[in-house]
Length: 72
Image (tube, rainbow, N blue to C red; front, top):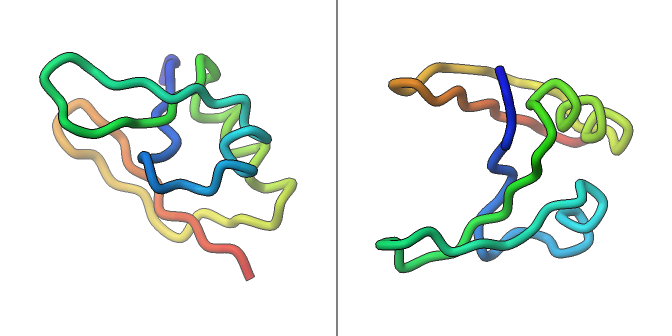
């Protein structure tokens, strides 16, 4: 997959978003904000692994890939 990668919503942990280098944006027509990074998903997942997150599941929704992660 290619970037950018959506990594959170407007209620996400700001410290985690800062660690990922994420920027907050509001797409035209949406009434919510989202965080994204220009990194590809592989790079984002590697960064999250450093913090103890592990992939629990992954699925495709249309042309979107969704990963579910957990940290112990």
